[in-house]
Image 1 (cartoon, rainbow, N blue to C red):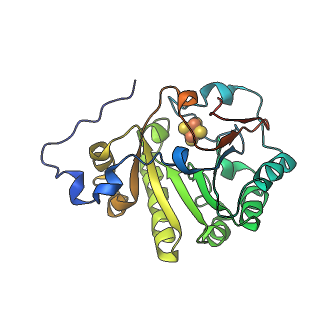
Image 2 (image 1 turned 90 degrees about the vertical axis):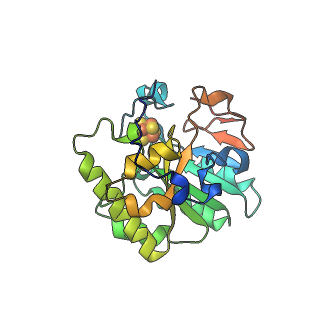
Length: 232
Ligand code: SF4
């Protein structure tokens, strides 16, 4: 059960910050992606309520390169794929292994990350690499993602650093908050370093049973299995 966030009565409605289209839930990946790729079931976090909870307890897997290339070879140019984990950016050479082959195929790519790469040694290099109009990056950031953090202020600082860098360099990016509506997101960022980037936040619907969500394309799991629904 997710914790409800109380709303101070003095706050203006979120509509004053965001366009109506931004207030809709942004789960459109499931309607639009031709392939959703679980690059790994490993993760740097252990968020309560993660749909991978069971999978994270299993043997740690990284998707085989040949299998990945075989699956994307069947996609038409311009198709949309989503690269997710676990946490993709904890894989060594993740960009070369998963993003470059998709770029070579002229695919559109959404990278989903918990922001692990931010301020790591190769951070500047990653910023340059993801600055491509075929790539957009979605950073998962919400109450659940910081619940186990010992230093919440640093988490906001890290995300704000990325937001500033990404905005200044023209990277397509957004923050995606699972299970939080517009008002909850507003309360979450109000008074933090992320407040100037409220227009980059989007709400994601929380599905208690992810495997029953209808998807347009297919799901490629880190063990190499391809399916018509999301397997956990
Ligand atoms: S960061 Fe994402 S994949 Fe990792 S534990 Fe949290 S919800 Fe799960």
